[in-house]
Amino acid sequence: MSELPQEPWDDLSADFCGPLPSGDYLFVIIDEYSKYPVVEIIKSASAQSVIPVLDKVLSTFGIPRVIKTDNGSPFNSYQFREYANNTGFTHRKITPRWPRANAQAEAFNKPLMKNIKAVGIERRNWKQSMFQFLRQYRTTPHSSTGISPFKLMFNREAKTRLPSVPRKQTKNDELLRQNDEMSNTLMKAGADERMKTRRSDIQIGDHVLIRYEVKENKTTPSYDPVPHVVTNRKGNMITTKQNERNVTRNSSFFKKTKHQLQAADTADEEEIPDVPTQKNHLKIPEVRDCETHTSRPTRQRKQPTYKIM
Image 1 (cartoon, helix red, strand yellow):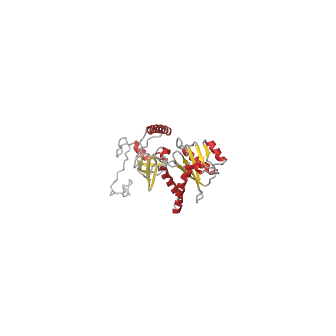
Image 2: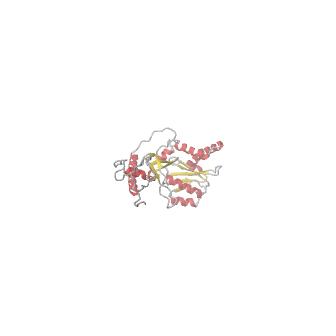
Image 3: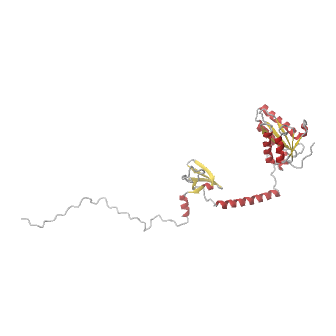
């Protein structure tokens, strides 16, 4: 029997399952403290395939103190030994021909392979069934600890379809929220000052122009010259309509049309009367009666000044 480690993800056990009928292998990693399993699907059991997958797992959960494996070919290779030295964990190999020394991984492989065999008989997707099995295994209290692996690993209960009581906030949660709010406020203030942002006054019903995301060439205008009508606004998300086309963008993509900007500038001025002023009044010529005589005037006859003989 092995002594329980001091903390989660300190001592790990690793092993292989397979090959499966699909030709894949299952690379199984078990945390000996929480009994939390990680299963990765790989195409080959070579060191070239195992090292990148193990590196991905360690980048997610952190570097352990010890990783215990059997004496398989990938773990006996020079590449794996160099990887362990460069990463910073101790690689401990069990006694050859004695799999009981790696009991954590070996014990988990039995129900895992039983699930995959049952799925093969039922002709279902074995990968999806394996993920369902892992979700249930991680959230079920373990027989040796009485606590679920997920709880021991992450210090919280996983959300499942079963009803649960909301978790109470702790002092760490309050401090975390205060620090996060302060950091977000400083970042927003700096970004607003750098980008010279101003509050958008676009409302539902306004006519706006939308900015092109990609310009075809340098002569293309920055905004679509055909105006859109604002139909909805939710925070900084604005939805407009042009004919039968709806467009949803951030408020920074829109600006009011020139007509509306001029109307907004003159909204506070006095109302201009409809009757034109005396200065710009146009004189309309008087229309004469259509019955007036329009024929040519007759010539006046005068008597001659000479005497008639």
